[in-house]
Length: 487
Image 1 (cartoon, rainbow, N blue to C red):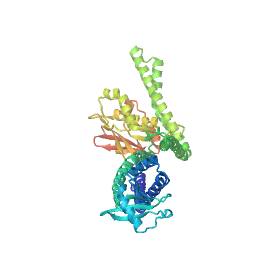
Image 2 (image 1 turned 30 degrees about the vertical axis):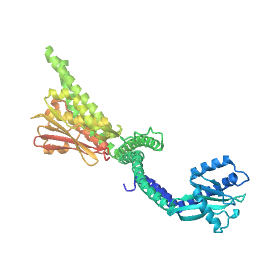
Image 3 (image 1 turned 135 degrees about the horizontal axis):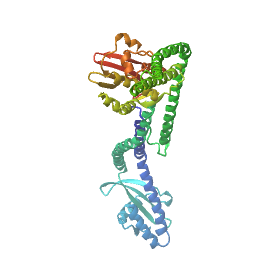
């Protein structure tokens, strides 16, 4: 990103560094020469005060002269002092004797040596050398003449060299500081980018990502901790909203369907219970009248009665489940769960059933597929499809289960090899108590209610479902809304 904080942070720091170096260069270039000269003047005036104390009185103070010699070597100053008879009274040990004739020349030339006019002056080209000196000469308090001289290096050239060196060093420091700043800023920008990525995933309703640096005791760590709390709160709230929204959609259609469902329910139940009740009544009467006295016949009659009673019991349970779904008494709880794991677990639990029927089950999905729905009811939908596939599996005896990811949804399909469903029956298989092959359905205890339960569950969650015929078998399918994975 061109406007990233990392770029801005590095740019501001480099600009401050470059500005500081340029300011130093400007100050050096403008004021360094004058500062140097002022410093030299201060040293000369200070030396004059010390000379006046040492040799400007009636007697020479030897202790102060020793300190004066040390001061001359320290500050590169040479001194010459003579009396009114041009007799040398004091010359600094670092070449003060060379100033004798120069001081005499000033005196002979009639220069004003009044002590009140001790002003420094620059003198060029002494002794044939291109050197500059700052000199001060005059008369001490006791009437003795003096001269102080200190060499003036070429300060202008020195300033240019210093500024050039500053430019070189500054350029290198700007580059080094830029690299260091770029590396250090990564420590701050990486957590911010991680938080931006988490917030983007949250906009797509993906709440799995959590900020791992929330333990840091700084502002970014506090922000990360709050985002983690916000993520958990949003996931819970969205789950509740989806559940409430789903219930609202059901309530809109509920009242219109109740009367018709009651009539249809009573009609279908009375029709379906007629046959098993007749069988139970007939075999029970036979037992009561003692049509067959042998034990084997009585046991057969009892087995038929118990079998029909069990089928009636199973059918009644399914009808009660279907009735609760259609009347909206069974609340649908929308939650996020892994549908691939649900399928794998069910296939494992139904392994004995498939092995007994010598059926090969194929399911290769290993990734996590998060969806929104009522997990327990979706398991019942899949159980009905899978059980139906087991009961009708023929020929190669293969059940193939697939998850097809669509835009915002996933399609779960259960295919079994065998005879396709007749075309005139496809539109009715979702109706209560409808049986394509009544004899085969009765043989494995089917009631014709399982697919009606599937229809009621999928409609309660407003999701699509269906069936597709193939030349070698049948495929039942249903869809669920997926949790966004756009990261």
